[in-house]
Image 1: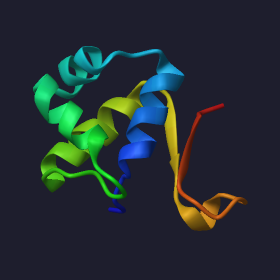
Image 2 (image 1 turned 45 degrees about the horizontal axis):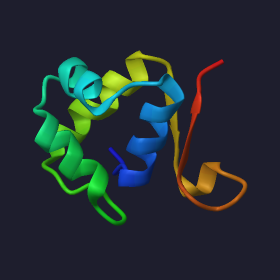
Image 3 (image 1 turned 180 degrees about the horizontal axis):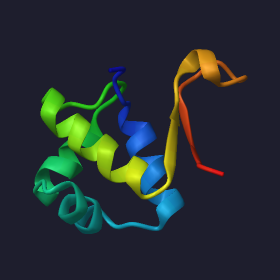
Image 4 (image 1 turned 120 degrees about the vertical axis):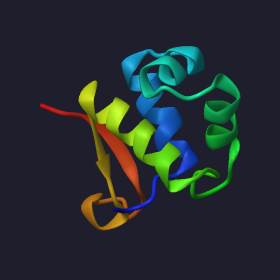
Length: 82
């Protein structure tokens, strides 16, 4: 499984118009954990289990994560599923 960046998590949450408490609730994590994951530079600062919980919650809500090779601009990104 590929890693998520903090920026991808913030962007995905913004696309869904979710607050940090909403993401924490849906992913079954604490708000401080979500805040810490989003404040990192580069890869999200958390355990693999926490990253997977966030990924699953956001993907189930309609987010598609794009890795650098899938994005024409060359960096990781996010978009809503069609």
